[in-house]
Length: 452
Image 1 (cartoon, rainbow, N blue to C red):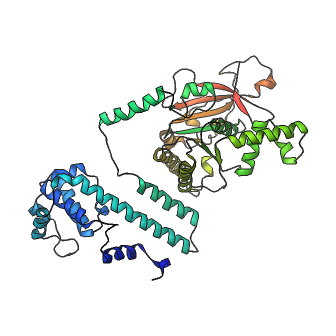
Image 2 (cartoon, helix red, strand yellow; image 1 turned 180 degrees about the vertical axis):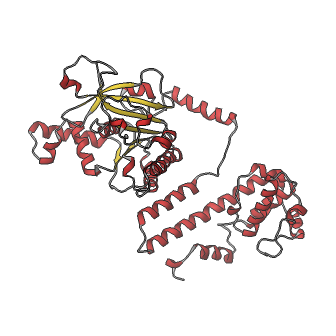
Image 3 (cartoon, rainbow, N blue to C red; image 1 turned 60 degrees about the vertical axis):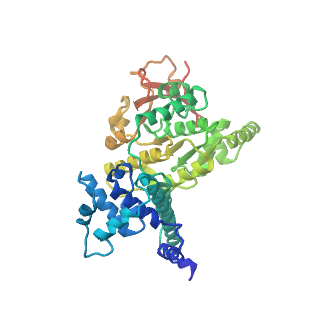
């Protein structure tokens, strides 16, 4: 047989023919079904689905017993057989077969162990299926490989996870929380990834694992510079990834060099550097090279490919923080109405954060009202903010200086560089002051906290 044309069904058929049951366990499936017939309360301990049984007839029987149990009815040979379909041999179980099934069960006390074997085999079969899907993508010359591969990787990630566990005991949650608190007390773990801005971190506690923070602002205020500044600060000690879809790899690198070396961007672009600038450039290269930063090398991302890449960077480099610049440059639902598209993207970003347990700072736009001069920012000023306001955990908005909020006795040329960063939502932000003052450097792509 041509191995390039070998399919998932071919592999399973070969397993059965050879007697090798590496990808399924006929004995475990039968033992679990028998254990349920003997003690139906075993079902309360299980979260298996019928699809995880390899033998379809076994899956059918399991689903019938699950349905009966969920209806609060008694499970025994007669009630189960009454739900069978005699006209379909692949799904039917006779009364005699049900009696034999329970009689041959080694023990009804080991249902969870039988279920664990069944789930493990199902996961292994899923790996074969996904590998077969990858093979099909490779041979399909008309398929768009990036999105298709990202979907397979996403499925593989879900398959690698343990079975769903809807609830845990409060005792288990307390043990886990206590262990984490001890790590914080000892200084071995922080509650969140610190931004490198002291006032910002005092208010927010940093970026928490699994949380989505939205950064917005008026045009020209410096939100992309702020996002880059945070990545540069974080990258000194913590692996992080910067997905700058708008600027691309080379411009992102150039801006980072200008930030660290305090070099005018035009000088680098023209290739005309003074001796002092050349020295600063070399020092900036060495500094930037030492930071644990990974940057996007493509301008085309959707939610699936973004999640797949973040997962890859977590595995390879242990990244603990992500910045996305910016949400509306993702290609998902680009023909859809704006509110529907925002809803889809915001929900998708939140799921990435939650599923990968990683904090993300994502840049998002303001609506027209939010761009009005002198407007004090609020949640309503975020573009299409309905679902977004529920999905995000925190939101910050960067604006120009507004003397109606705070009056500073500074020359106008200095006031032009003052920015205000408002905290408009934060699940764990400290109460009190809702903004901090920032200073945007007029010559270099640098932004920092204002020091009075």
